[in-house]
Amino acid sequence: MKNKSVKLIAFHLPQYHECEENNMWWGEGFTEWTNTKKALPIFKHHNQPRLPKNDFYYNLEEKDDFIWQLKLAKKYNVYGFCFYHYWFNGKKLLYKPLELLKEIDSKEKIHYCFCWANETWSKTWENDNSVLIEQTYGTENEWEEHFNYLFEFFQDEFYIKHDGSPILIIYRSKMIPNFNRMVEYWNKRCIESGFSGIYIIDEYNSFQNESICEKSIQFEPLYTMKYGRTELEFKYYKFLSRIFNFFYKSNNLIYSYSILWKNILKRNIICNSYMGAFVDWDNTPRKGKNGRIVLGVSTKKFKKYMKKLKNKAIRYNSEYIFINAWNEWGEGTYLEPDMKNGYGYLDVVKDVFGE
Figure (tube, rainbow, N blue to C red):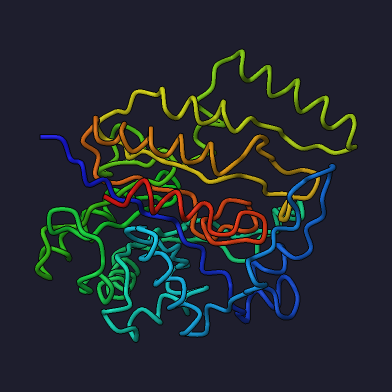
């Protein structure tokens, strides 16, 4: 029987509050809004800087601002958030919104899961590879400490589970030494704690055959930019980028919204993959004239493509679609209301997932 209740899970970036480390590395008061506000248009009608509706530059350290996000997502039929979780062998970063989940009344909550963003942090935004904080993984003692932190959230009735197993998404599993041993340890601890096990999903579709990940996500649009294009399309993007950069004295990579979505929709989905979606893409607030820009974006096209993707998910009996993103303002892909489109993207989600 086909599953008609396809649910949309949106990736959620918590970097909208200050932390001591970001203040030290990037300057006092740094949040993701810092990048967003300083963005400059590169060409005529370039949609930069992106402005949140009513100039609402929220602070996710504030409980009311966080609750506003949860209520808005529920109102517009976003099933859940996948919160990025930053853990550096016991050191937490950007964790304050996650901690607020423990304080929020169940009437105001949304379903959620975590994605462990297991990367070393460096100054790549400034084309500088100097390390800010290194990602290391340890062994059983460190795995136990990490499990104990996650377990508090796993127990929450709103934490998303698959057949009784809490879902944990790993940003890039192949970067982790002894990955299978670590997952086996967490699986054992979950079973000892009353769950069916742990359900590991690889965000970047990067695991190899011997990995014990349950599934992967075709994280868009980066997956299609890298893998889901023909050689002819690749040549077209290079040509388009060359012309663009000649006129605007930049080094941007230029893509077509319609072509990217066409490839997402025509791709065969293997049984161990969740489908990905994206709203828009323009990471020039972070990368400047070295960014990637998608052209030809509109709410009308987004609605057409999301309807087709949901129907595709029904055909493949896939329970979830993971969308990039709820609030990636620095990468130009967000469902939240802005000054240009208002609630347009959220209206699409409400319509498509409003059965």
